[in-house]
Image (cartoon, rainbow, N blue to C red; front, side):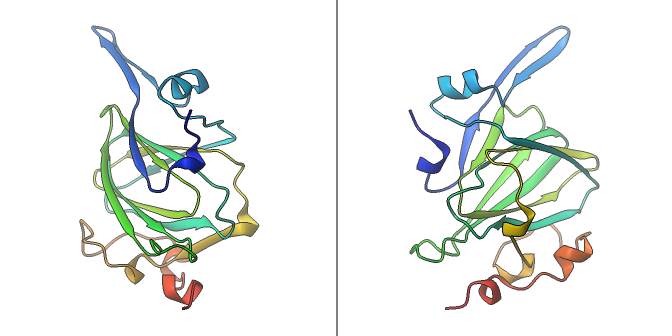
Length: 176
């Protein structure tokens, strides 16, 4: 059985969505379902964010690369997601992976430890569910500016928090 830390790069996982005339039932963070698809991921923390179109929620990750796997699911709207490998000791350091997620797409994104994560809402009221395999540790958090990596962003300008606007560049955090 795979564990989230066995993944070397982010992966799209199919979640279970049952639909009928009443609507839909989504199973995403269930330990039993995740185990059935080969992922041993115990949910320790859960966040939901609601964003306006063009809101960019900046790159966040952990200094300790052995913790911090995440599962991202878009509950409403759509988003452009970016993951960057911040494991300085790996040849893949700085590698960029991009994904598009939309509500009811049946897919969630698994992000292993050692990656920073960022997304841009591409529609109004984009609602994102983020499951973490460890409680969020603010003292271990690392943030860097979205413009410090080469990504073809969906918009020229974004709505950012002050923290994300003022974050240092990736290479300032992890110099050569």
